[in-house]
Length: 177
Image (spheres, rainbow, N blue to C red):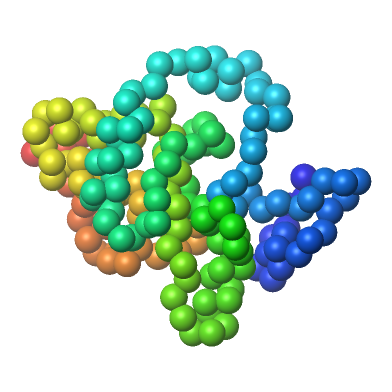
């Protein structure tokens, strides 16, 4: 594993380079296969835990996000985080895409939202839907996306709306609304 921290380092993973017959791959590329990586005892135990209906969660999130993302899918890479943004399978990784967009003064391509279906925040989405609280399910879906944007080094499209949505959900969680 190489840790490349400079934005221009994304060029290396897009080139056809490798070591000892193994190609360089970016973790922000959506098609990384983690099946060959051995799981720790804790991760193996978590992988065995029951998963809520992935299809229903994905459908709710896709509806709430609309065209903000190209796709929503369950993640094999996330253990503690609720969601992350990755690039569509082929093409540049997220960092290279953002670098090229800044250089050409254009918008970066839309990402794929990967969700951790075992995370409590993600599991709360179908619970809100089942309670006929579509507004809460939509707010949670948007919150997942905006948190993933922040973790990716981006600013949400509407920071004031993000803060308001976060405050409402926190207050609901502590029983103040």
